[in-house]
Length: 118
Image 1: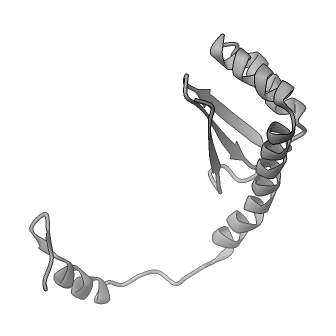
Image 2: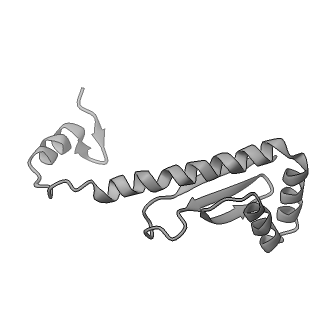
């Protein structure tokens, strides 16, 4: 069965892609991104480990977020001991934490964590 999507056939698109010329593959940035990601995963593990082991820390973090004390929220995250740079946002239902390599290539990689509390 030939599927149609927005007036284009998937089969036609696949045939056109086969004739495109692509530049030679250079995995350097991809490899560097994957390498940097291991540090982000370690920090994510540290965060989830500390939060799951400490109701006091979780309570402080939630309370500061509920009162919109962004600098206190950041200080509490930093107190966990992570090495990554981060951005944090929160709603009444969850916290979203984006981790970036410290001093790494801008935009090489990012790890987003969404932790619900309601």
